[in-house]
Every structure is written in structure tokens, then in C-alpha cells.
Image 1 (cartoon, helix red, strand yellow):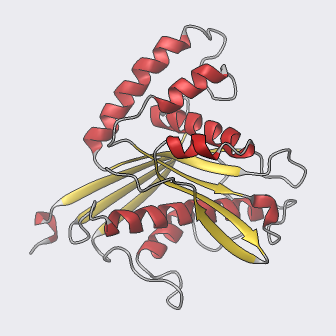
Image 2 (image 1 turned 180 degrees about the vertical axis):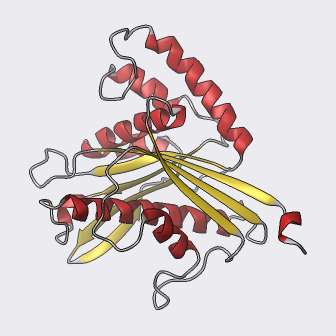
Length: 255
């Protein structure tokens, strides 16, 4: 069969972060969170719903050209973090207990960004494994993966660019001793983009989710996190010098 005749599936990730990763930060947690969509149509529908509801609140903040979670009232932040509640709008997140990772050099921005890259790579990998296991994607089809992240410094002291790092991980090429292929080579395209939240509706939506999640984890509100119905919500920490990844889901999400 010719490649062009294969069925194609598009997968969209939207992510934003919340927290300050610094040794003296008042935060103990750094969060990446956002949404996963399994088609372009679902992405467009989510944009329409979020923008419509965002406009209803924006009139209350004429001094702010952009509604950011850190600038609006908690009730409005909570509302916007829950507005994309249709079953096909999948919330995703990874939470890091970052101060327990001794290898992070908090005086080196590249070291910090390399850890952030690791978190994103881990989140994407776990999601793709779950999608594959639950047969929500067909690995025999062509798959286009789009990862859209809020603008950030992309300097890293790692060798690979994040785009190439994630792709190598999904194809089982990053470390052949400890990795396994999730997707088939030559059947996946991956494009990672950094976008300004001012112009990206779903990055702004992700900002609300990430900020709300960090508030809840910082206040040990695990029940509230479980009720958010995340597709993936993992906490990564260190215990007795071992990296521990714990799911904060109360039960398996259904799509």
C-alpha cells in the first residue's frame, strides 16, 4: 500500500506551565498541563467554546488585554478551567516535585530547561502509550502529532532539540537499552511549536488548567484533582534516591 493512501490521524497537544522552578521558590511543584485532542475538528470545536466563554468574562477585566490565570479572580479561573468538559476534550498533566531532584542546577537556566524538556517528553510518551493500549489510535495509520506550548526559553544543555528528543523516544531510538518503540517509523510526523498565549486560544485554556492544578496540589486538594477527570495526571518525585511516578487519577478515564 502506498503511504499516501493510508488513513491519517491528527493528534494535538496544548500545554502551558505553572510554577517557578528555583531553589528559593515558594513553590514546591512545577506543572505542565493542558489538553489533548484526537482530531482537528475537536480542536476547532474546543477553540469555539473556550473563546465564547472567555469573552463573557473578559469584559470584567478591561485593563488586561489577555486573561491569564494569575490575573483573574479564582471563581473565573475555576470556571475557565472547567469549561472544556466534553468527553473528547482530554485534560492532561504532569506535576514535578522538583526540589527533590538533586541533579537540577538551579543556577543554570539550561539545566532547568533540560528538566522541563524531560517532563514534556515523559508526559507525551505516557499519553501515546495509553492511546495505543486503549486503541484510541491506529499505529498502522499515518499519524501527525502537533505539540503547541506556551513561549519559553528553549535553550538546553541537552544534545537534542525537544522535537527530535520526543520523536526519538516514541520511535524507540533515544536509548535502545531502555526504550521500546511506541509508533512505527515512517508513519509518524511530529511538529512542536511555541506560541504566544495572546494569539493561541487553547494555550490560554491550558494556562487555566495548569494554574488551578498547581494550586490544588500545593494545598493537598487531591480530591479536587481527581474530580477534574484527567486523561493523564501524574506526579513525579524522588523517594530514597529513586524516581517515583504516581498517578493522581481516582479511576480510569473513559473516552
